[in-house]
Length: 233
Image 1 (cartoon, rainbow, N blue to C red):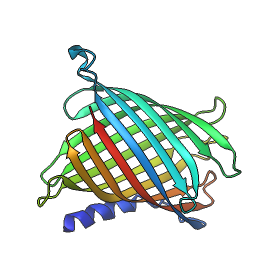
Image 2 (tube, helix red, strand yellow; image 1 turned 90 degrees about the vertical axis):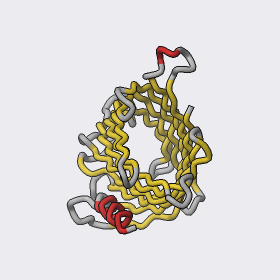
Image 3 (tube, rainbow, N blue to C red; image 1 turned 60 degrees about the vertical axis):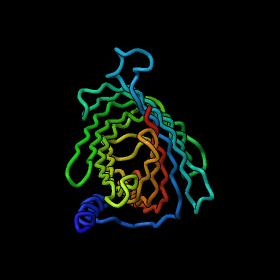
Image 4 (cartoon, rainbow, N blue to C red; image 1 turned 45 degrees about the horizontal axis):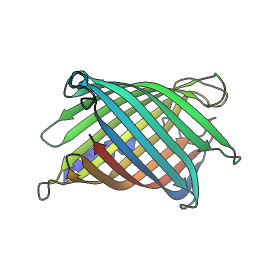
């Protein structure tokens, strides 16, 4: 299992920005829950098999599970270049409670590229997204995101998988409501998945969520229990 710890160490290295933080605030425990459905469009027409549909919903709680503070509704249309590579064009709606207790309905549009790489030790997935975040008004924040994910089914029970992933999010520019450009946040996950069938998989684990505030003066470390359901159609 040494390879597991090596991969985890590499993922966690992405948690810290280059500069030493001025102050780190350890936030409460919370949780994220998501349901993701993805499949091709051959049910409409056999000619549409290369096209894919991605539907996703998320709910997020903080303050020791006392406060629902964010949701995500995401949808995208994709095209499979090959059995490993897919390009996407999508839209997200992200209602968020901000520090003063008011709510902002953020809207995102984005292209994405995903590449799946099977190996002898497990499957790696790479996903690159470039979001344009419309937080308030017409001053978009450009938000590059890079996800690296690793999944390895266990030999003793192939339906059970060991899962690691890390996603780095940057602020590509400085905006009034989106903060100063630079490091934004990092998400590192370790957990397990269970495949009930090729069409249904659930995952549960721990996610460390490290965020930089808009002016890079303070950072927040969140400890999250994350549960996911993935549906293939």
